[in-house]
Image 1 (cartoon, rainbow, N blue to C red):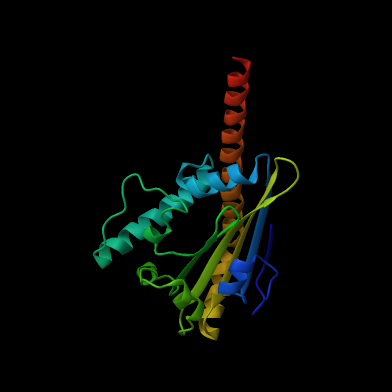
Image 2 (cartoon, rainbow, N blue to C red):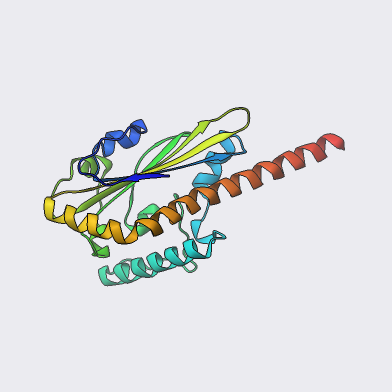
Length: 218
């Protein structure tokens, strides 16, 4: 994983992410090689529930996030999250995020806009075009891109890039301060998320291969 936090960076990255957030104050990259086909990896990526990860720390972080979102939804009079709550790419809207774009089988980009420390500010419905154009002072824009690419025979490179940008100088200073405090934990969480997808994809791919071999033998 690589991370940086100098102002207005322009990092090389996936086309879809570059379209929605070409410049960032903070950039974080995570990668892992998955011993499964790109198709199996992408299917796992889309369906996995991160709240079911083996990582106690990741589950604890997500539990805090779920509790925070529950409070925000209650304050806004929105329907409550189901119990138990899922955290997946299939229900990002439940958490105030926006599915910005998807290139089926290759890349998914998710974004969010909020005022610092105000979870309720996430829950403003915006289109992908509105996300791209948004530049009101006092906010932070974030986008994350999950990318699946072939990496040799029946292997896949799974990449996750996060870009965060503040919309004004004062908010940018807050962003850098919170990044100093939370960067190690967020780095750990990002790595655990893609490793969980890796485990699920490899397990599913192995189960399919075993079933296919058994069918051939009989």
